[in-house]
Structures are given as structure tokens and as C-alpha cells.
Image (cartoon, rainbow, N blue to C red):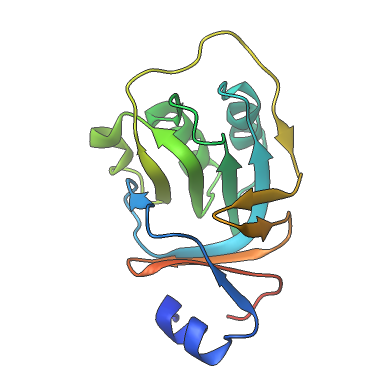
Length: 159
């Protein structure tokens, strides 16, 4: 894949924002890029699961915000849905689980950390809404570039 986040920041400094250093990789692909789909959840992942099961993910990266609540919203089941529909990756401002097996899927999974429990009562989420993560505004249709050096957000496709 022909990009490095450091080069993007150097060459497009006026067009790039960078998420903080607290994210870690839990997926099989450590380098990915795509058009952003935003998802805001309140602990429960029902709407995210449905979205990953029912939509074509080619060229798309789902960016999920759960406001750092200590519940896992992505695990091996959602990674299977994302892999089956060919999403490029998932970035979670929160926690994931099943990380022994999430690495087996050839898509990216980035999160702040792990948590073994999920939130059982169903709560609705919102898809396509603006998010603010690490003081960076992220909108549906933005672009994201991820490699081991970090996560770069842009308002337009630059690679």
C-alpha cells in the first residue's frame, strides 16, 4: 500500500490531523486506509453489528466512538462481519475483545485497549454523525490512513 503516515504529515501538513498515541492494533492488517463511516454508540454494539453485516465495505473504514466507556464493542463476531463484507478496518475510541482471534482477520482493528465484557441491554447508536476524538473532528466521508506510526485523518482523499 503506497503511503506512510509520516510522509502524509510532512507532505500535506495543512490537510492532516493526527489521533493521539493511545491507540493499539488488534487486527490482522496493520496498514490500511479508506473513506470514513462514523458510528456513535452508547456502550451496545447492535447498530454497528447490523451495519457491518449489511453494507459493502470496500474502501471504507468505520470509526466508532463510545466515549471510552469500559465495555468492548468489537470482537471476533463483528470482525467476521467486517471481513465478510470487505471493510478495510475499524477504529474504536474505546475497547475491543477476543483479541487472540481478531488478529486472524485480514482487516485493520485499532482501539484504545481491551475489555472482556460487552454491554448486554440493547441501546441504539447513530451512524453518519460527526465525532470528536482526541480533539479531532471526524465526519462521514473524511479519509483515514493508518500504519504502525499512527492514524491520520483528512477531509479529502490525498492518496
